[in-house]
Amino acid sequence: MAPVSAGPLSRWHNEVQRMAAGSRLGIPVLVSSDPRHSANENPLTSVPSGGCSRWPEPLGFGALADPDAVRSFAAVVRAEYAAVGIRLALHPMADLATEPRWCRTSGTFGADPDVVARLAAAYVEGLQGTDLGPDSVAAMVKHWPGAGPQAGGEDAHFASGKDQVYPDGRYEEHRNVFRPALRAGAAAVMPYYGRPVGVPGLTGVGFAFDREVIAGQLRRDEGFDGLVCTDFGLLTDTTLPGGSVWPARAWGAEHLDVAGRVLRLLDAGVDQFGGEWCPDVVAGLVEAGRLAETRVDESAGRVLTLMMRLGLFEDPYVDEARAVAIVGRADFTAAGADAQRRSMVLLTGRLPLEKGIRLYVEGIDPAVAARYASTVDDPAEADAAVVRIGTPYEPRARLPEAFFHQGRLDLPEDDREHLLALMATVPTVIDVFLDRAAVVPELAGHAAALLADFGATDDAVLDVVFGHAVAEGRLPIELPSSMAAVEAHPEDRPGGTADPLFPLGYTARVPERQA
Image (cartoon, rainbow, N blue to C red; front, top):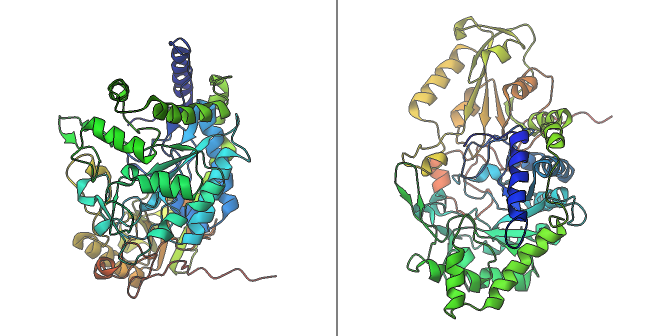
């Protein structure tokens, strides 16, 4: 997916609204978006920035555990989204990252229930403001009632990960984390694909298909009367480039045809079908007497009410020149870079490196490194090395699963041996991009310093390494000591693997001396 900059995007938006104004009913279009402000390169869960300021992944805000920082970030998202006409954010994620292998971990605020609850609420407040209105971007909190405890760590986008399991009996703990975001006035909620296994009172179908989950626990128990939108692709299969088919994620309802799935979702309390275009099916059900028109009116009313509160009927257009000036504004970009630096976590060793050294780098642009030290091509000639790596994963061959980082978390043998040899040759600082919980005891035991980032530029990492900035974060997820510990860990438990390498909340940073 190619990034679209503010100018073309705002022009596209205005043209879409002009087309809508000329349609039979003249109803404007409510444009939504997945996250655009961080490092994730999965086109099914995020969007290339198109010039938006770049910030750490939400997991980095979990490392800071600062609601004010999240509100400030969300206010920037609101400004940049609204400038180009995006008025509904398909975020934040209020899921608990309790299963270390889960590929969606980076989009969460971590594994600490209290931190996640507070930060999700702060995100809603920053996007929507005090009251949802013409200056707001509506927040769609996901994935109700908690998408983290995936069986074996496999994601529910795929049949291999359709089950969510609760071996520790923590279903309610996962669900309750959403409560502060709902009380903050979240305009919309998205349930996940997964089907819960062994939860009393639930029927073993995907969350969106379960009336007790939506009409019961969300609407009846939490008093939520806003928009409920399914995750994308619950009704129809998707044909991919090359002709392969990605099956609909209708877990537990695979036996139903499209019409049957529509009826089951509407009966459960859903209002909108994410990523689908089949109004003929809904109209046909009404004409056949299988679906009451009043039920369609109920959901249409929720969509229209949201659009009215956002002021789209009064003025759906954007100022194209203002959009170009707002998106990626210098102060937004600077604030994002500062958050990247602050959110990093020092795990072992001491920083900074000394100035004036000879430096060997891997995974870093040599031109950037040359601004901090004299660079050399041979580690044997260096005084120190700085290496950037990502969290290990098992590549999947087929699209779209290839976009998701899943499976094992430990270093492949070739990478392990290479890094051990390098660390034996020269004092080496290793920075790991934690999009999941890396299992790296070898690095912890041999690196001169081990640093974690949650989406950062080379400049941001080197600023921390050379002392121009301080890593202030604490681990928002636990780093296990072995894959055996991961595999033995209950998928629904926050932290608590056997003998963790670094526990939840850990930092090696020495606190600043109090005055």
